[in-house]
Amino acid sequence: QVQLVESGGGHVQPGGSLRLSCTAPGSRFSSSTMGWYRQAPGKQRELVASVTSGGTIRYGDSVEDRFTISRDNRKNTAWLQMDGLKPEDTAVYYCNARRSVTPVYSVWGQGTQVTVSA
Image 1 (cartoon, rainbow, N blue to C red):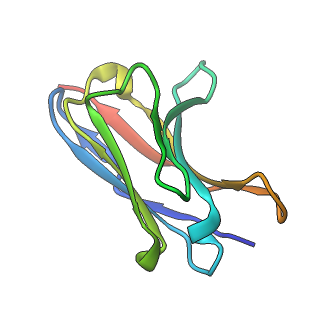
Image 2: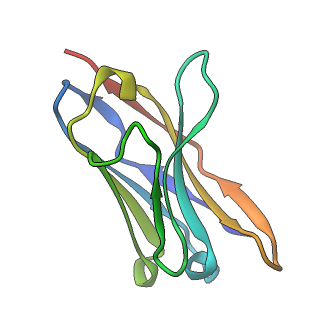
């Protein structure tokens, strides 16, 4: 079973940057699609960015050109570099590892708070 450990959240002023990390100890990381999702109070969880095991990247419409997702399979780690942060980016950010072929799984991290305010 893949387990995920997130870090890097915090408080930043508008226009600032943060870098989130998601580490997945174990051998299944390289075959997973890694994704970052976020959930603001009163809103549904939404996709921020994802990267497949083959390197195909997808971004949510609201973050494209500001956020960058990357992964290093040797370190079992995925990152989300967030630049040009806006107050509307405030949310709990969750890392997800999923695989849609056998063995199928979807695992979530514990979440990390990102707050953008002056």
